Every structure is written in C-alpha cells, then in structure tokens.
Length: 220
Image (cartoon, rainbow, N blue to C red; front, side, top):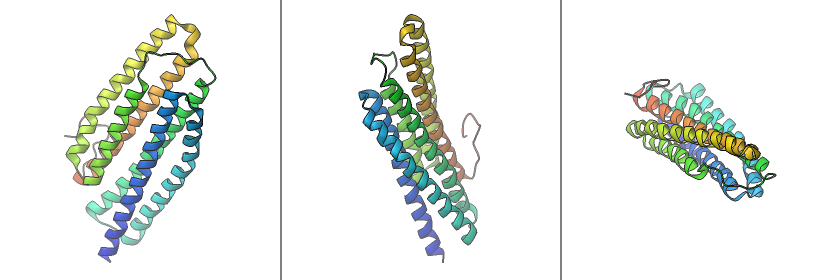
C-alpha cells in the first residue's frame, strides 16, 4: 500500500509539472504577442485558459483523494498541501497571461509606438523566478527556494522603474496615454507572476522544512 501511495504522489507531482509547463507557455505566448503585436497568438492564450483550469481541478481532486484515502502524516501531508497551493498559484499565472493578452489585443487597435519599458526583460526575470521555484520543488531544495525571494526584489524594482518611466511618458506624450496605460498593466501582471513564484517557493519551504514563511521578509 505504501508503494502505491508513493506512486500516486509521483503522479501528482508529474501532473503539477504539466500544469507548470502550460502556465509558463501561456506567459511566453502573451509576451510574444506583445512583442510582435500578433493578435493570433493572443487567441492561443485565451484557448489555453480552459485547459489550465481543467487541469487545476483534476490536480486538486487527485490531492484531495490522497488526503481522504491515505491519511498521510508529516512530510507527505505537507507535500500534498503544498501541491494544492502551488496548483492554485500556477492557475493564477495562467490568468496573468490572459490579462496580458487582453491588453495586447486592445493595443492592437492603437498605433504601435516605442514605449520606455522593457516588457520582454521583465517577463524573462519573472519566468526565471517561476522556473527556479519549480526546480526547487522538483528537487525538494529549500535553499534554492530561498534564492527566489532575492529575485522578487529585482522584479519589484523593474516594475517600479516601469511605472516611473511610463507615468513620465504619459505627461510628455498624453496622446499615447492608452498605449502607456496598457503597458503599465502588463508590467503589473508580470510583477504578479513573480509574486506567484514567491508563493511557490514559500510552499516548497513549508513542505521541506515544515516552516510557514508566508508574510516574512526572509525565510531564515
């Protein structure tokens, strides 16, 4: 029975990693749509939302079934609870991708202008946070999860810089306010992706160390 239980835990982990891949791809596509102004890519993001939501429900059900039937103790219990929380954050990463795609679609009706913000770079760092947090999950490595928090400071600083640059730009070029506001929202969406990665890192630490570090400045 214990062998079967751990096989089920491995399957749960694998399904969560599939979810992570889908959420990451959605963000990549939404940012590519921003970069190229290719609205057909936005449609791919919108269509992926249904699959992401479906998988979120399936993973939650798998986790709840394991809790109900196996009554796991200690680290296995923390693992399952962490999967449920990580699953929710990954679904929200998918939501951020949809939000970005919506902004890009709105920008498609506007003049394409150069804006003082590097959205692809911000997206790259946010996704690097997601990948590192998930690698920490794969390896059960709390120290690696700790390093995600420092990356979050960088994402926050980039988002703040984007806000300052774009608000100044709006004052200088009020005729380009719609484009600037959409870019502001996209930067905020990407900052939220970083926040979800931080949540994943916190859940890894909870699983491995049994420590709840939510709302703390550091995990130590």
